[in-house]
Image (cartoon, rainbow, N blue to C red; front, side, top):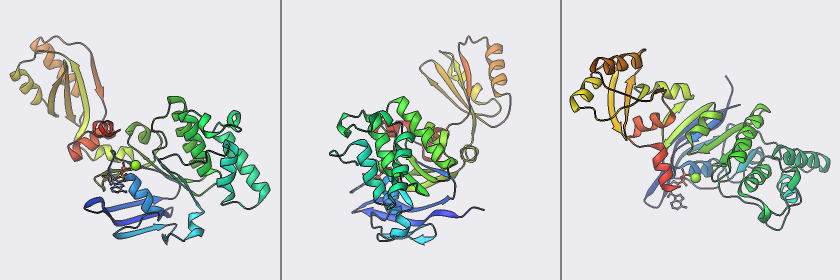
Amino acid sequence: MAGKVVEIENLVKRYRDLVALDHLNLAVGEGEIFGLLGPNGSGKTTAINCILALLRFDKGSVKVFGRQMQPNLYEIKKQIGVVLQNVAVFEELTVQENIEYFCSLYVQDKRLRKQYVEEAIVFSGLVDFRKFYPKKLSGGLLRRLNIACGIAHKPKLIILDEPTVAVDPQSRNRILEGIKELNRQGATVIYTSHYMEEVEQICSQIAILDKGRCIAAGTKEELKCMIKMGEKIHVEAAGLKPSQLEEIRSLRHVYQVEEKEGMLEIRCSGGKHNLVHILEYFAKQDIPFGRVYSELPTLNDVFLEITGKELRDSAALQA
Ligand code: ADP
Ligand code: MG
């Protein structure tokens, strides 16, 4: 089995009375794209800052590449590439100069550095913008510059904190594809986001955070198997009687029926042919219906079942 790149045990971080990390446990294996998924305020950035030893914590331990992380542990730090949530580049330097600057902190050999900077520019799609100053860049391009600065030195571990927030779809896709490419080239990646779709799309392992705790971890398939819901069936139908809703609820595998704006949302535990049984009931009762579709669980359903809250909504509210 591949070694652990990051190991967090029982990590507690308080900001005065607020417990931002509450006995957090995480283990990131070599070669993974590890997703930290959680709503705003769940402790993602705090966890990242603790991994990087940018922040003192109250309890627990953080190991990176098998070493207890310390603020002055430079031999470990130089193997880490960081893309922080808030874009941090120099306004006085051009795109290329910014990347050169950050790369020069790690790579002393001039020729190698030149090659790495060029590769980062191409990789980030910034070839046409290399002479631009940051204030002339769109939000998406600025994010890409921020990433280029963090990864130009080819670190073994890359940590990206919400790199796609407020980014146009084109840049977003480019960023997500870029992360997969860096991983293919051998980097272990830690990726935080409150967008479950992104995390599902690129992450090989996922930890779901809520209130500073890891409430579930595994592959997306494993996470979806942890919950009762196996399928969610939507039927466009209005005006059903309470007795009919009750009867649907008593069908095999059905455990929850909700009516939302003319759509019935019927949650079923595993099992096959749920849709057939439900539509048979509609036919027998002669209830008219419109659109019908079935959905497999999403990570939002996992979050909802474990915490009782929507991942999406809680994130959107605070975005
Ligand atoms: P996330 O990155 O998941 O949005 P954060 O790690 O930024 O979450 O925040 C976790 C919790 O800690 C939140 O309740 C936030 O308000 C609080 N917090 C974060 N930074 C500070 C700080 N410097 N001082 C006080 N509270 C903070
Ligand atoms: Mg954050």
